[in-house]
Amino acid sequence: MGAPLTAVTTMPLSAEGLVAAVSSRGAGAVASFVGLVRDRNQGRQVTHLVYEAYEPLAEKALARICEEAAARWPKTVLAIHHRVGRLDIGEASVAIAAASPHRADAFAACRYAIERVKQIVPIWKHEFFDGGDVWIEGATADPDDEAARERALAIACA
Amino acid sequence: MRVTVRLFARLRELAGAAEFVREVPPGATAADVWKGLVRDHPALAPYEASLSCAVNAEYARMTTSVADGDEVAFLPPVSGG
Image (cartoon, rainbow over all chains, first blue to last red; front, side, top):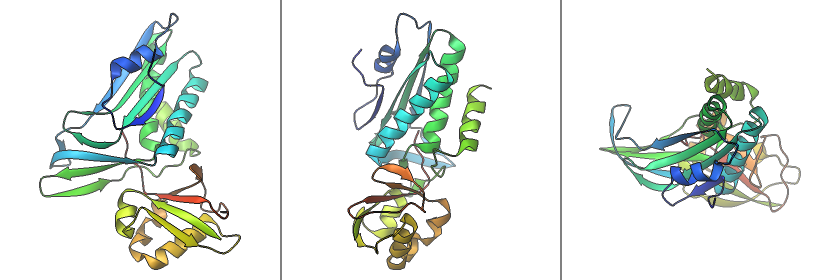
């Protein structure tokens, strides 16, 4: 299999590697998600992003998301890799794969994972655009915020 | 006692460094460490309402007590993905 299930890395991401890592004889479905750096954001022409992480805590937060998904979808195996450092337009910033006996749980776990990444993983985007730069600030990270977790679950199961 | 403060993203830029060693009184909480930091770097103050903190690379509360040698991290709102 090779790839670890969670990673924060400066190396380019491989969705194929994650799909292989979660696949098994009992898996009838694998859903994958790849987040890419896009060229426009809120009217700005983006040139590149630089991602910064608090790596030891980010690794733990990714592992926590996998544990949460395993508790909610017991036969589902999840893998999440997040890239850090400079990323140009079109490069993958995050890759997720979820394997399950059936497609519904694979899709749900995959969607849940990206929503939780955005809520609780200590990683920050520094956006560079034509004319300046800005730190993107999203959610105040609190893994014990049950309302946030419920929101992620509601989106995943919609 | 001494703690190591770690700052990230915009907080790091506002304070001008990623890491500080700070002297705090025994019994200090993460909130006390933050208040001391804001005294020296007032530009950080607006982040108080949207901050997360971690002690020794585990999420913690601002009411969490810190011990000599601890690493206390203050995190602005996250934006991974």
